[in-house]
Length: 285
Image 1 (cartoon, rainbow, N blue to C red):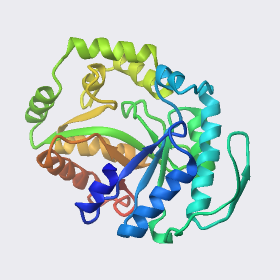
Image 2 (image 1 turned 90 degrees about the vertical axis):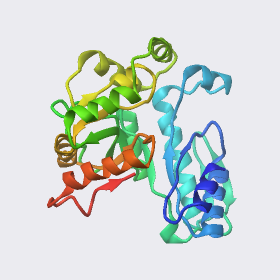
Image 3 (image 1 turned 180 degrees about the vertical axis):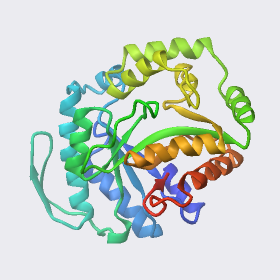
Image 4 (image 1 turned 180 degrees about the horizontal axis):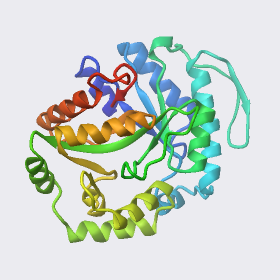
């Protein structure tokens, strides 16, 4: 529903929609994608979600173990992609069965959705390869980050606060994300009810690092779910360029509070990409 509102009120934005197999049959997902394409001639992206908080999954009677949820996600996404490509889908797998299932109207090839999936675990990376999806990770500090795995498109999810001067950037960052004891307690509770690999990794990272420009206070206080890069345009741009050099060519940004913040972020990206060979291959979402 939100995607339709976005498409109706913009000229070029492509909504990125989180899709969880426990919520919806793959045919329903494909039907919505092709309907939006048919009605508006616009593309959507799909973020394929394997899991969630334990209590939420149990409420849905989903007891599938962590790694097996990625096996299910591969089947799920394969059916969606085959339907969107116009195939008649007869599938008999471990999790789904279809018999001569067909989607109408077929989706135009140029509107085929890009696929994203968490790449923080080995199971997630394997699923990304099987689905030909972009594996999205929550980055470590650049000095500890490893190169992106060969043969898999990779990206990172990160927030950015950049200004001309370092001090101004930190003033804005601390005003946006003040320390919050209630948020810290909520974060601790979330850790107890989540089996997410990335959540555990980032929480361990939060207790081990405090070096600028890599900043985890918003995550520690349960204000967001990703690291931030904070500092001057030049310093943030240098950090982003180093991630790009490691093979992370897609950036999913944390939601900026307004157009002004997105403007400053664009300046940092422009400086990171200026004169570099990645300029035509880096996607910013």
